[in-house]
Amino acid sequence: CPNCGFVEARGDQCDECGHLYDAVELIRPRSILDGSSPVVRESTHLFFDLPAFSEQLIAYLDAHAHHWRSHPLNFTRGFIENGLAERPFTRDLDWGIDVPVSGWEGKKLYIWAENIIGYLSASIEWAHHIGQPDAWKAWWYDPDARSYYFLGKDNIPFHTIFWPSELIGIEQLYEDDPTKRLNLPYDVCANQFLTLEGGKFSTSRNFAVWLPDMLAAYDPDAIRFYLTAVMPETADSDFSWADFVQRNNSELVATWGNLVNRVLKFAYVHWDGHVPPPGPLRAIDEELLAHVNGAFDRVGDLLSAVKLRPALNEALAAARAVNAYLDKAPWFAVVKLDKTAAATTVYTALCAIDAIKVLLAPFLPFSSEKLHQLLGYTQPLFGCQRITTYHEATRSHDALVYDAAGAVGRWEPGRLPVGQQLKRPSPLYQKLDESIIEAERKKLLAQG
Image (cartoon, rainbow, N blue to C red; front, side, top):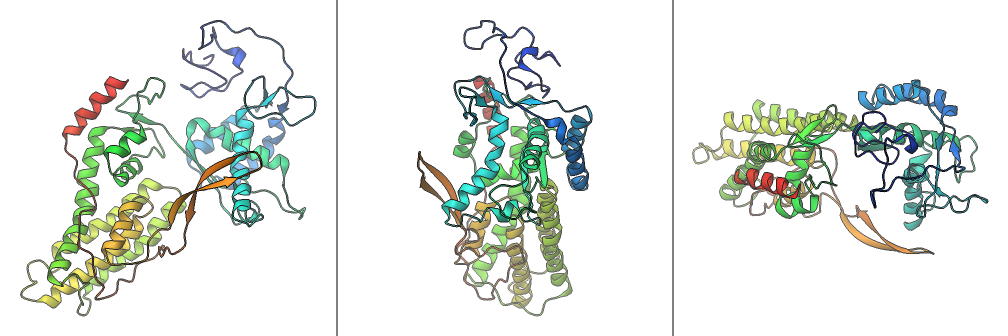
């Protein structure tokens, strides 16, 4: 790398420092295929005039500065203020997207010139396949529509400079109203880096945790929970197997899973598998439900601001509040002496659990759906996903499609009916044995 000296730098961007450069600036370049030294030759290319968009890009950043994360905002602003350079948008390659301009046969489009267009072209294709060819315009021309882009920090400039410039440059597409303009990204939610046991992930060195392997061994919601809990939203963070086990056992299982299991089992045993009829709600009951129901605004605001770790923590705080409530309210010890008091407590706890199920659904969709069924609901919380094959003029391809038909999930507290039949409880999550820590670490060292 001409910037940091990283030995394995390649292409036009360093994987170590993220610096962009012209490939001819590489120090002692060599072919990864046969080790030979490449020869520099002159070639004519099409360039994208990025400097022409500098003022518009700064205005765009200023308009969104109040809600962007600091790193993508400051990185992009500094990138522009240091002076944008014209970027070659064509390549001399034998693979890729052909340049659709007469006289440029044999040239291919630069990958970052054409792949980011997929956000728009995929929307247009989706609208076509659902039989509503203009449906995509609701996302791309409605000024109230917001698009969120999730990526790692090494891809920031392509989404905060290249893509907005392309959208500004074309202004509009397939639209008769000359006043309308294509929407620019509302938020570029770039994460920092996630390290692995203190080291850098490397797929080339096989120093990585592969998702198919992890899904084969662990609950998908346990994986989702941990990755959200350590998400590098504002600073680099680390994936460690010890932390994965600890958070699964002490937070996911102990704080939430055990709460659900003990309340459902208690209700199932003492009220013949039904939601118990409460007496008049007491101050302690109303206080808990007000706190839990108020979390919809708190968690919702955090999700809208793409603060996923704080949102998860806020939802877990609601679960902790239910645990604290059960430490004070009469239920377990008084069920044989004052069943109405116990019923009121269990009913209140079940209503709170029903609400927290929704608060946690963005993070834990599979177990939230299972809990939804355990609580006796017959219609699904979520819709279903299916693989659909689409046939086009030049090819056929499969697509993952979400069907929301029949789903009853709403971002609001539930209305758990008194007397509703509960299903026989079963644990939502499994406690992990600490022996997997060393086993996974050894596997990592062996494969790396």
